[in-house]
Length: 317
Image (cartoon, rainbow, N blue to C red):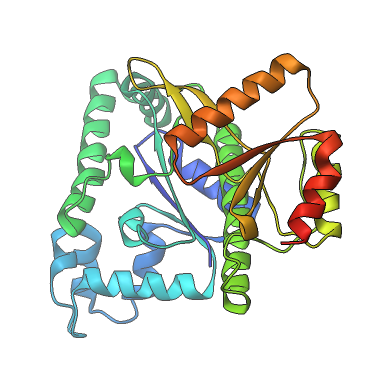
């Protein structure tokens, strides 16, 4: 099942965003309190339960069930993910699900001065008191992950998305996370289609059997060509790859070539053209440069008037 983990700084609106995401998706929201009550309160003594609430270090102690409380936490949450989709906020969930293929990891932050102002408003305290509250919360948030998982919760490389709510509303941040989740869900379905096809036709690893009507083409000539390929039962993949072919002095890609179609059965990329001679010349130069940089990659520039002859040639191979 799918998982969204949310790590947040205090007063960054992380709690509000996690709640909004869970409501929009209809998924259960798991907080530190929820996890402790569901997975630990029924099976540990009152003393141990209190220690788990108060001490990060105690999660590394033996639980009496043959594993540490940390390991028990990981086991229970991974079992949960096998049964239902969920939004999890805090308690190192981004570490626990770091290798989970269906997990999205989000970090919610805001500048310190913005968070200080929010804390002052929320608790009706002075600037100095707000600073102490914020420092204590930040220290505890970070210490929990460091102590329990030997990891840094502030490391941006752990996250698929980092949102700064200084000028970002809860609604906008929620929409961004939902958009990412939708995109990931779509990509995972494509990956599953590929795996199912590989099981049936292992000799055709790069083709997903689908109608050309499922693709949004850039122009009518591409759609027409795809229909012709379908008619002749020639497998194709639309815009499967982009090849960088020029770089500037800093190593930034300044020119790339994305062929329109790939025919896996013939290991050939096709670039269609119905343009003026000027643009045809540019495409030919790109194709030539691509083949110089990527030996073994076969590219053909196809003119509309040559569609049928090309199809006839491929269908006879």
